[in-house]
Length: 117
Image 1 (tube, rainbow, N blue to C red):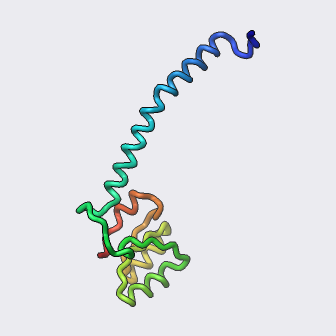
Image 2 (cartoon, rainbow, N blue to C red; image 1 turned 90 degrees about the vertical axis):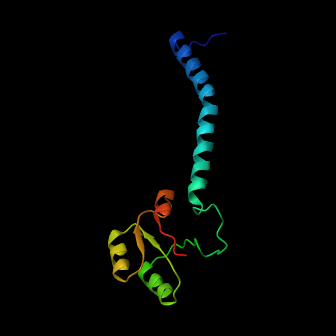
Image 3 (cartoon, rainbow, N blue to C red; image 1 turned 45 degrees about the vertical axis):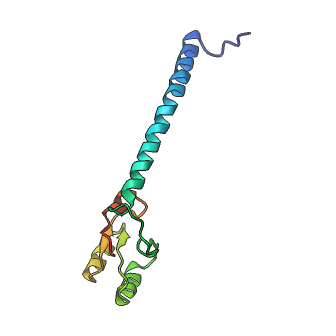
């Protein structure tokens, strides 16, 4: 039974697209796994060991970075502030607080942040 919803050429293109998609699926998943493994390798300390200090990589969203950063610095608690607002990064640097401009949810930005330990 044929409903003739698509011309013969449309059916052929739909079938070809389906076959290509099914064929590429394992390749896409393999590439995804390889990229995830690479991200995990690069997100660990360079010596491959895990840091025992649970505060060594503490990420904390704050509303007032200068006030919080100043309080932590006064207590000699090492920190790196990652902030998207470049003016705020400049203010933090004027207070001798290590600050980096960028998005803290971006793994590439996190890799740029220097270790404070």
